[in-house]
Each structure stands twice: as C-alpha cells, then as structure tokens.
Amino acid sequence: MGNVWATGQRVFVEDARGGDAYLRATWHPEGRQFVISHWQGNVCLAATRVPVEAAPQLIGLLAGALGDVVSPTVAEPTAAPTDRGVLQRWWERSRSWLLSRAAG
Image: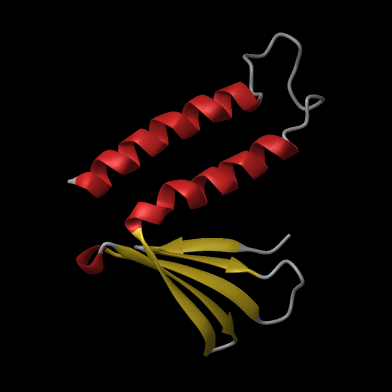
C-alpha cells in the first residue's frame, strides 16, 4: 500500500504501483474548490479543479468503496456494528454537513 500524508490543507497519496508518482489533493477556500493533481516526482502531469458542490459525490464514492471492503471477520461478535449501515449513516451526516456548507 502507498503512503499517505497530510500537511495543512493538502493530502498526498503515493501511487499504489510504487515509483515516484502520487496524487495531491489541495483545498482552496478562496475559490471554494479542491485541486486534484497527479505528480511524477516534482512534475505536475495533470490537475483537475473540483468545485465544493461535487465533494459529496466524491466522498460518497470513497465511503462506498470502504464499505465494500469492510471484512466481517475483523469485527468481534460482541463488538458494535461496523458494517455498511454505520458507513451509510456517517455518509448521510457528512453529506448533509457538506451541502449546508456549500450552500452558505
């Protein structure tokens, strides 16, 4: 698995294939947008500006994928539910919060 690290309003995700490639996600509050860029070493290969209004769909994709990979063998039988329902509730709360922030 690639390394992930964050600094301030940036998150860096190393490419899972290794090498010197990584994704950088940066929040730009002045423009109410994220910039998702693809880097090879110190060279930016591509960048996409994502408006804050699109964030709930992107978060939904990521949260849904996490829900798909939750392993039922990881949770102990007496543990609180950690299944897709928990992720769904988290997603609904997060989406509502993001939409209220985007509208304001």
